[in-house]
Length: 340
Ligand code: KG4
Ligand code: ZN
Image 1: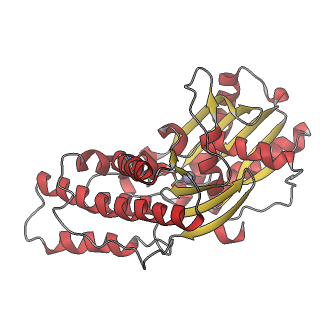
Image 2: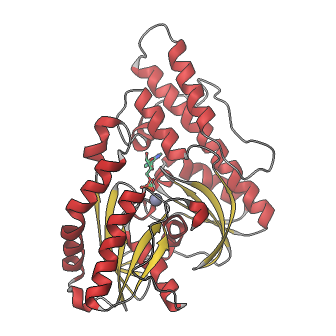
C-alpha cells in the first residue's frame, strides 16, 4: 500500500511516499528558512503563500523519487493540526482535491503525535535501528511544541505534560535572535555552545515543581534577555558562546529531568525523543547518559526524521486508515492541540 504523506503545518513543505506504513520510498522537504530568516521567526502569511507555490512541484518530486505516478497512490495522509491554520489549509485542501479527483481516501493526522512515530520509519539501505515497544514515553520538542506523551500504540496516546508558554525550540530561536545569530537558531546555538562554558551563567531552571511534567521556557528566554541588556558593552564572541552554552544547558537540564520523571511516573522502559530540538547534540548526549543510568532504552530518529517531514504523516495515516478513519470534504484545519 502506497501512502502520500503531506506536511504543511508550519514553514516546511514535506511530501513523502511511504510503502506499507514504514518504508520510505521518497521524502522531500522544502524549507522556507530563506524567507523567514530576515524576520527571525516564521511569518504565517508568507509561510502559507510559499506552501501554495511549492506544493505541486514538491508532490511531483516525491512521486518521481519513489518511481511512481499519482495513479499508483492508494491513500493520502495530511497534517490536520496543530500548527498555523493558513499553512495547514494548503496541504489539507490539496489532499482533499486529490482524494476527490482520484477517488482515493485521505485522513487527517495529528502532527505532534506523528513526530515520535517517525522512529518506526525505515529507509532503503538504511541501518537496522531498533524500535521501541508500546507503550512508551515520548518527548516531542520542536519549534512549535514541547510535550511529553504516553504513546499507547500507533493511534492512541495520553498527554503527560506540555509547555505552558513557549516551545523549547521557540526559546532557542528567540535567544539566537537576540544574540544576533540568525534563524533558525537552534542549530547555531548548538554549534557555538560546544566552545562555550555551560556554567558561565546560572540561568534559572524552570522545573515548575518537583515531579511536574509541565514545561515553561518563556521565563528562561527573558532571563537571557535581561542578562544581555545588563551588559554595558557589546557582547564578545566568547561571551556569546558562553551565553549559548549556559542557556542550552538550562534547557537540556529541564528536558532530561522531565523525561526522567515521566519514566519514573509511568514505570515504562522505552523513551522516544523527536522534534527539531532533538537534533541538539548536548541533549542527545545527556539523554543517552540518563538512559544508561536508569537502564532504559532510548530511541531518537535520525536528524532528518526528527524535523518536520511527510513520511511521519504517511506512517500515522497508514494506521489511522487501517482503523477505518477517513477524512471528508467538510474536514477543517485545526490549529490548536487541545481540539485535535
Ligand atoms: O520539528 P521542527 O523541524 O519544526 C517544528 O515543528 O517546529 O523543529 C524546528 C525547531 C526550531 O526551533 C530549531 O531551532 C530547532 O528545532 N532545532 C534545534 C536544533 N536543530 C533544530 N534546536 C536545538 N539544537 C539543534 N541542533
Ligand atoms: Zn514538528
